[in-house]
Length: 270
Image (cartoon, rainbow, N blue to C red; front, side):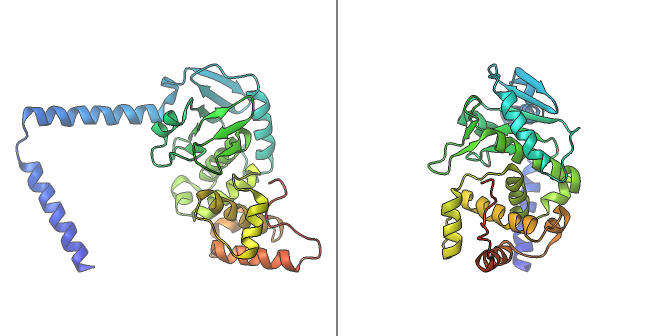
């Protein structure tokens, strides 16, 4: 630990010395330009309506896009609303802003740290950015080599649930919760993951693993499904539990194996 402090202090001292050195006019201009670019980027993230000129308002959804949206977006949002009805912390009066990106490259601009996600929810502001979507087919693709398709209505429901969790527990509070609890609950509400449920259940029963994010989401959703449907836990109990993901999955496997009703591990909606 003392070595770490020495390294930090050395870096800090070097940074201070650098700041004291007079900068050339070109260097100051470059710094100013970079600051302006960063500020412009943050403004676009915070107010993406600047570039998403088209919009559709429907109930508590505001959907933005670059090109006109197909009328099927209403059907998609109806399905999303039905999924959110199953969410115990749903707020029907909450307005959800959804931005449908026209390409994978455009999505990477708005979600540089998760370029192959199906969607991203900007913390605190809660702008929801959707990766490349086919509104007519109700499909979102993420550009990954596998596990790369989900229904648009379930992806929107997933991201809206992230917003609802932040409203319920506070943005700082929810960021402190384990990711399996957050992602598992959001996928449980959405009723879908990108991992094939039959394959996922077989892998869990056989003790096999998969390094893909898709399998992590499947495992998380399966754990939350057990806590909700077998243990009848509230969302507060789930978020506050000290059990790990592996702990809950072990309980879920034991329950499924000992049940006379042939219980599935994954939610029936999957």
